[in-house]
Structures are given as C-alpha cells and as structure tokens.
Image 1 (cartoon, helix red, strand yellow):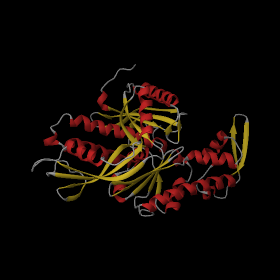
Image 2: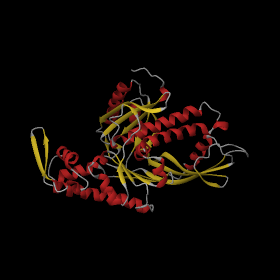
Image 3: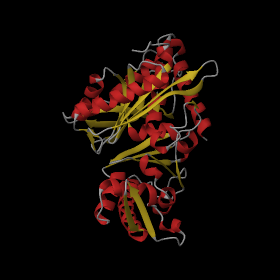
Image 4: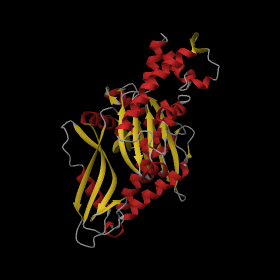
Length: 420
C-alpha cells in the first residue's frame, strides 16, 4: 500500500455511476491555496441499473479498480471519499427547524447551525426512506428573516428553511456496503445533480436563477437554484441509454453499433447538418454499417422531445418555466451530444450552455469534460467539508465560529471565479 502523506489536505470524489465508476483526487496547493487535481480514474461498472446497485460484487470490483488507478496516479492512499447517489427514488422536500441557542448575547456558532439543521430533519418519513442531504435556504434569527449566513450574529432563537433530500434506505445501505467492501470510508453522500452544480455553476448564476441538467446514462438529474439557494431537485428515469436503445430498435442494429451511431453521427438539432444529410457510416472491426441520417435524426429527436417535455413539466410545477435568467447548464455524458445546448435553448425557452469543470491545476485534461462534472463536484465538496471540519476543531467556536464557514465560502468563491 502507498504511504499516507498529509491526509487532511487531500480530498476524494467517488462517482458510482450506472456505466462507470470515476474517482478524482485533489488538494489545495500550498502556499497559493490553488485547487490542484493529482489523481483521476475511470472504470466500467456493470453492477448498477438506473442509478441503483443490483450486484454488490461487480460494483465493488469497479470501485476497487478505479481507486487503485487513482492511488497510483496521485501517490496517495485513498481511505475515504464523498460519494454520489442517484436514481428516481430521490425526493426533495421543504422543511423548517427551530432551536433556542442560549442566553441573550450568544453568538451563533457552527454547532448552532448543525443543531438547527438537525431539527429540520425531524420529519414523518416512511420506514424505508432515509435523509441523505440537508441544504439550508435561509435562516431567521429572533424574527429577522432571509439571513444567508448567521454565523457570528447575536440572538436566542434560530430558525432554518431547508431543502431536505431523501432516498430509499436500501439503496443508501447498498452504496455504503460496496464502499465498505473496498475498505473506503464514506465522508458524505451527495446527490449527483448537486455535485455537478457545485462543479460548474457560479454564485451569480445561482443568485439569478439557473437550471442544472445532468444527463447520465440512465437518469437525468435536475437542480433548480434561485436567489442563491436550492429550490427544487428531481431525477428523471431516462438518459443517454434510452437514445442508444431507440437507435438499436429503430435502425434494426446491435447496441454497440447504435452507441457508435449516437456518439459519431447523432445531433440534437437536425439544422446542424446544414444540407449535408445523407449516409452515416459506422465501422466496427471488419463490418461496415450504413444508415440514413434523416432516420437517425427522427429517432433522436423523438426521445429528446420526451425528455425535455418532462423537464419542462418539472419547471412548470414550481413556477419556473422560461423564468430562469441564469439559463440552463448541461452536464453528464448526455451533454456531449452535438447541438444539445441549442436544443435545450429552443425546448425550454432559456439560454443554455454545456458545463464542464474548469479552473483547476494539475492533471486536468481528463476532467475538462461534462462527464466529469459530478465526480469533480464530489471532490470539491469533500475538500470544503474537510477544511471546515479541520478549522472547527482548532478554534473556539463560541468566539470565532464564523471562521471555518468563511473559509469554505472563500474557497467556493475562488472556484466560482475560476469557472466564470
């Protein structure tokens, strides 16, 4: 095994996806505190279906191989990570928490925020559901509303308006189990869409109102932000594999051929052909497969229309259809489909772009792709959480409780600046 060096400075994101397991290892370079990627790995995963574990051993083997590759590249032994969770079983709900923080003159500290967020998780949940994430929207202190960061403020009654994300408990336990099988500790579990958002969105977009669409192999994650806060999450049970399957059926060809057709010849906007519609040729080994591009366009367009109708329905349900000035940012493997941003712009009547992680040093060529938005966001979350935990153990929270929060906020602003 590799020697562990300066453990607290390293952060690990582990994206346990339906088709691939990805790992990113990063840290803050001294003395500049610039974000640096030191390890990247990706391995095929055949033990998942639509974001959930269906074969523990297969998933554990994929994780183990990815971790070993990342360890070799980084020279860092991986013992823990922030991991992703996905699937249409994910549900987000609004909740409030209230606590008494002490006598008059008490300054709000980190442990007060933890307690009030814990209070927001006291919910009537079915026995088979589990809370995986709590995202504060705003706080209220002694009647003063819409406080974004109450650390250091004085008061006796603290309230929080939070977005609570729940998942089916068996799926959570299975993810924890496969990590346990690889002797990897789980620091935190984060919804894939929120991890992607942390990786590619900046503060201005989230303040103005923005939709993050993470298009994976078998699911599509949605995360809506407005006024700087998470407003809505949803996971649709459709993704890039649906397009591949449609092409295989419609073109009467094998799945591996259909996948090549999608990646090499499919476009989200038939206008991109610019009069060059004709034949699409795919060569696999010694066989040559020829298809009409017009037929490919028709098949792809039908599936995209269905996906974006579902996305629009989610926006209409929360009163945000065509009402997000920050527009749409697309990530995930599905975002690599040619013309997808133009399609989203037309379908949702919002500005749209493809997002990818930027602003990092080190081993960056591989992560500068929309497919790496989730795992890079997981690493960043692990990095920020680690910095906050480290500082909170060193300071007197009753006097300096805001320092760790400001540290995390400063890091986020630094990453946001690098991405903009």
